Image 1 (cartoon, rainbow, N blue to C red):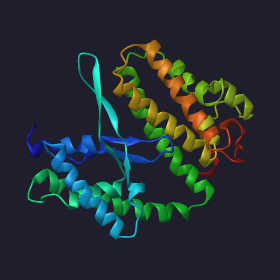
Image 2: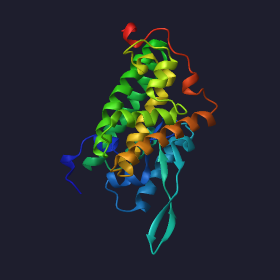
Image 3: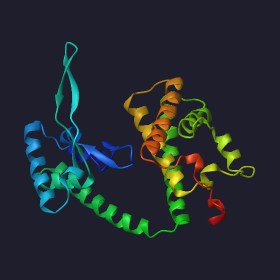
Image 4: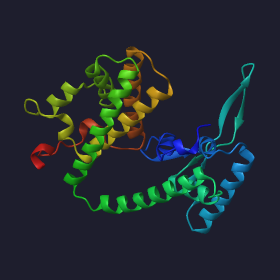
Length: 265
């Protein structure tokens, strides 16, 4: 394993996942490796202490330590089920607080999750106080950053035609509509950006599509354009299906704001 001096807070960001509801989480088995635990038995003991602490603080432990067992191969086409947890940021914070702070990676983890937990508390309070237009500006910036990162990953995955790649994602999320179709449906003027003319909820749908597409391209080690386009379409469709299952509003039926973000800015 690399020397601890090579570690940064990105090591915890790199193993972070986003679920179908847009919530971030960490897998206990992956966190165990990063924290340099060799045995699940010992790490699970720490988790149990963290669960007790969570219950003692009057939080619902099941909301932060969701059981996420999975099957792993053991050779000869056989597999077995192993225990795992889907951990919230708060759960990770409690876990690392029960680890040895004299170990440098543990000390780094304690700082990371303490700061991130506090940031989230402040962010949720501040975000809820924003106006709809302010939320649009915030989420539009998230989309911009997400697309920049996704473009780099897509190119590394063999994509040459980025326009077609992005249309694949839109078609999955918007029931077959391309970016041009969305542009026309919204009745936008020449050269207006469709993303600048979305409400905060519609932007959030696209943020989830973008994040999950990039994660799947990396996770599946996609190395050709055809598969990358297919992945983007499938992720878009899965996000759409999730919205439908939750009884949400389909993105194409959400209202188009009266002013674009460029006008507001």
